[in-house]
Image 1 (cartoon, rainbow, N blue to C red):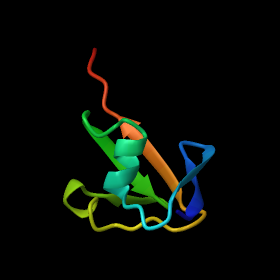
Image 2 (image 1 turned 30 degrees about the vertical axis):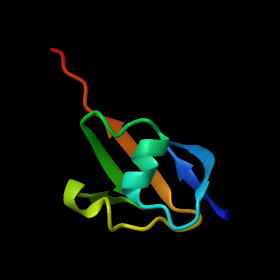
Image 3 (image 1 turned 135 degrees about the horizontal axis):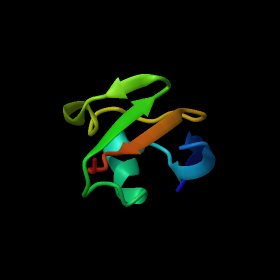
Image 4 (image 1 turned 60 degrees about the vertical axis):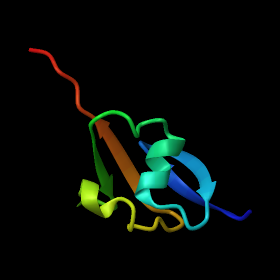
Length: 69
């Protein structure tokens, strides 16, 4: 299986080629919590995550929502 290199929350990571944003959330164990995802400074809405393919050198930020006050 071939892989591509991305930057996830500031750290280089190898993921399978052809992975989507939804796949990345599973890999990063962030698929069961409310998160915002930004790819190359563009927000990826939840309904777009299964169709948004990741490319080599994409810069992704996964932001976890935290409650509190």
